[in-house]
Length: 74
Image (tube, rainbow, N blue to C red; front, side, top):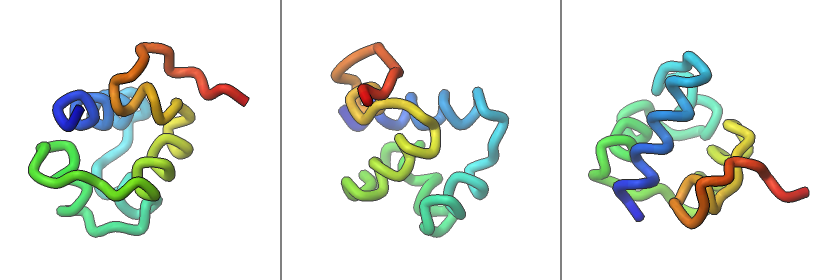
């Protein structure tokens, strides 16, 4: 799961043309903390993953690899 999460975080960020710093600011974490999420050296807490999913407008299941469907069920 960690590998998929890291890859999808990077993919979503790049698709939006954002820097790691911009995502980190939104999630209220240090830039190097967010970098560690993408490098698989640290796992984000659930509340951070939820914020990231909201920020990228994707489902939590997509970020963690449970589905390839990005849509958020509303």
